[in-house]
Amino acid sequence: MGVAQAAQPTPWAMWMQPAASPIMEKIRSFNFGITVAMAIVVLVVLALLVYVVLRFNAKANPVPSRTSHNTMIEVVWTLAPILILIGISVPSFSLLFAQEDPGRIIKDYDPAKTLTVKATGLQWYWNYEYPDNEGVAFDSTMLEDKDRTDPVNQPRLLAVDNDMIVPVGTVVRLQVIGADVIHSFALPAFGIKVDAVPGRLNETWFLAEREGVYYGQCSELCGVNHAFMPIAIRVVSPDQFKTWVAQAKDDLPGAYKALAEAVAKDKVAKASETAVEVAAR
Image: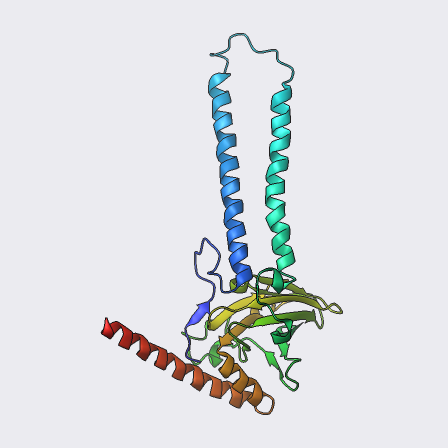
């Protein structure tokens, strides 16, 4: 559709994808905190090992110590791990609860304004339904190489024929279920990973903060074509979403075509505005 990809896998990446939702921002912060804590523990243990090697070797201590125990040291090495684990568990549980309740992160959250999308995992594609907009349901299948007309905007093994379309700045309640075997709906930029289990409706939420296309993949081994089951979510403006969903009920291909034209036009308009602002400086 002529829009630069907002989030997709990058070769040799050493960190998480940039956050595109409030929950992912929390996950990145939590991960950074855990990494710092781990680094401190490693350095402290390493320093103690070096100290013991230098201070208590045979050369420095011809007569070995006969100490059988040290109450203070035993109390410290028991309490320290407990306090560290408590420090990790408190924000961890807070984050888990936030993944179930948008109100824990979004202060002005209004359930009445939530958009519901149901994702059904099948071998080996996704089906999306919009219960709030009756009549809108479609399959999303990976584009084969021969069908990729725009390699730049249709990355290999990630691009699909029909993206999930959601409006920017709107809480999306995502319901996930499997139709045959267990799948897993995972999209890193939004901090989403929900198992699609047959007979069980799992639920999470996300709020896209920026327009663009975000990619994920099935993250549960589900058969021979497991690696060819990508997820693509296109985030558009609220007006573009309303237009798309109204047309998609009767003409899905036409709705995607009209959306592509609207997105391209909007991109050109924003580029022109940016150029004018730069020239004005």
